[in-house]
Amino acid sequence: MSGSNDLNPAAKRSPLQKRLYLAGAVVLLAGLIAAAIIYAMAPAPDSAVAMYSIADPRYQIELQRIGGNAAVLMAQFHQWFDGLWHGTALAYTVAVLGALLAGACFFIGYFFAGEEPQT
Image 1: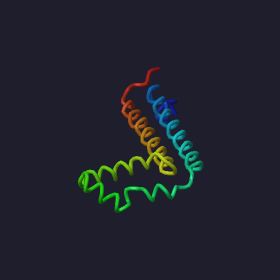
Image 2: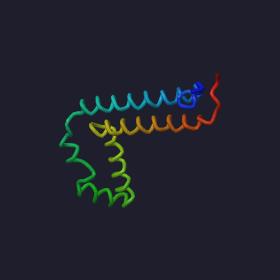
Image 3: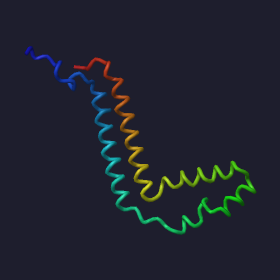
Image 4: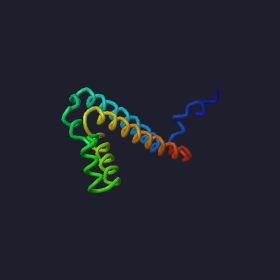
């Protein structure tokens, strides 16, 4: 035991890398907490939304007649994307975005591992 820091990998990290790892952990924790709160507070789905949605065959036929298949596909995509920002789907979206942002912080921090720590 010569007192070297070979056994402690945290001693080899630069201050920037430590900050990025800490930021990633904070973002992940905040995202998961926010997603849990949103999920708990989300209202029940509205039946009127389902009744007047793109799934109505009359709407799809009229939209296809006016704009073609591309208009129907774009309307379906728009409805899916709009649905990500309401109710329980918003909770899942916030959790995934928080995890992706935290992963980006960890990934960027990993590349600073090659730098020499400033002592």
